[in-house]
Image 1 (cartoon, rainbow, N blue to C red):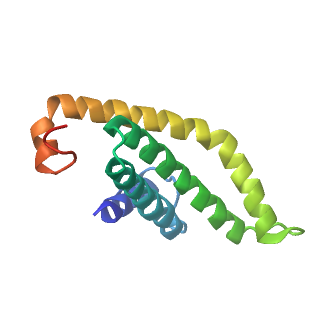
Image 2: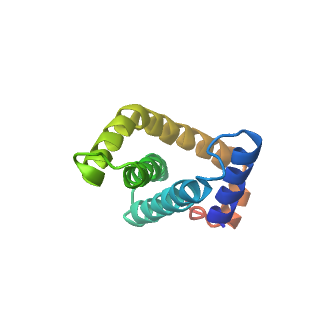
Length: 139
């Protein structure tokens, strides 16, 4: 479901905001609507099953899911624009370096924001979160 919703959002973003564009829609869907959410979900499930608190699991999953998106985008760009001398590997190193400097602080900020939003949802919508099995009823 996340992939479908992400694809719809990215389509609207491309058509209405001219951000991303239609020619890169497939690559954007892969990195932002498939890789990022699946990495975040897997991390969240793994961390919570290991017994760590919800806030830690949420922060780590949101932060690293976000970073996974940028790593995927870097690799996609490296494949599309290989370096003339060092090839795809050199281009990947360059793109990863640029994204690390700019996106790591954003990923941390988004991880913190996700924890804040989840805490607000937990406070005001606990019944709905229990109905969706987001966390156990005893939490």
